[in-house]
Length: 464
Ligand code: GAP
Image 1: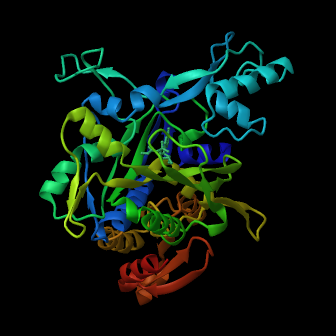
Image 2 (image 1 turned 180 degrees about the horizontal axis):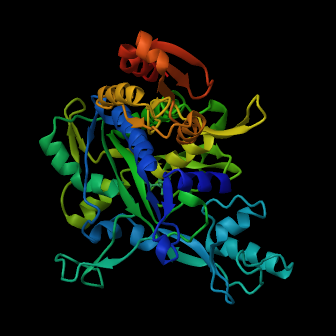
């Protein structure tokens, strides 16, 4: 983890937020390369889940929703994690994570059960604060994850909500999808079964776990809610589980042996069945959830219909039947995918000359920069050709130009940001119009014609 965090900062991928003020726990900023990588993963998801499908439409709903949304969804009452505090240093921990370190698989255990085990560990003298090492810990209690803020003026139609102007930055993006279900049915030519997908920020009052971007208080979700008749659920559930797993392998280039499904035995308040896709994070030293695939039944639409008083059903012509559609969702954290891609890609190699190099072997289609162009030396004639090549290529591929002059250092920098191809303009270029192209992972170099750079690299990226 330390190596990854250091590289992410040194090379402009991810910075801790508000560092000049001492930082803000579990909040991060994305630098130039981190933003490019994150956008590439997001685009790959959007293409796969929306643009290439006839049964899924897109949405970009607002972060704020009517506060009744969160009452109806169950989040105000049951969206919580078990929290435990150190009475001495005030450090806050997740009780389930603490127990996992003792080998317990805490999957939505009730508080009583958690506190029972904690009491035994306390008696045995094993229960210590992760921060100060002292033994003065509280019992576990539920800690609601919704973040609260205020609009500053009454919102209207508040029914049972006690506080007039409280709003919640959304705790999951899918609620915006349920609230737009009716508008989408009325405005788009969708027929059951169909999906609505969106990408956007979500906010949770997470108890900090120091896992870099794996668990943050502000994060991006990519969620797809698939509406269907309950008879189709089992079929579609299996279909989407396969689709999603294949996407990791074929589109993100993740090794199949680092991925697995985990079935949830205990379910969230809305779920009828749930599987996670887990990735074996080297930086965490364990398999951990990247995506959840859930059967949500008719919980969401029924509850929003009940709380809003608006009918959210569907008339199925083929079945000649009116009913509330059931929902199957795929929900993945974009930031966890960024961490996964960096985690698999980062490695250090020993070179023949005894030196080492650090490389990010990201799949070329996802790499932040596709090609770097260098003049071999700071020579006017070489610079001229290299700059012209850069101007040609930059219009179709994310391209960098570097004329620092030390070819070894330039390669090293590009290897560390995962650039799959480097092209060098040298003195032979001036004679025969060819350049050297060097491939990141094999370090093999070959000469190709100056005019073909764009085409050759584009083809290799598409086929990667
Ligand atoms: N709509 C369902 C839902 O939100 P979830 O299991 O709570 O389900 C889905 O979250 C995904 O969102 C997770 O698999 C994870 O990738 C991501 N996620 C959840 N909490 C996160 C956090 N605090 N930081 C980063 N990603 C998070």
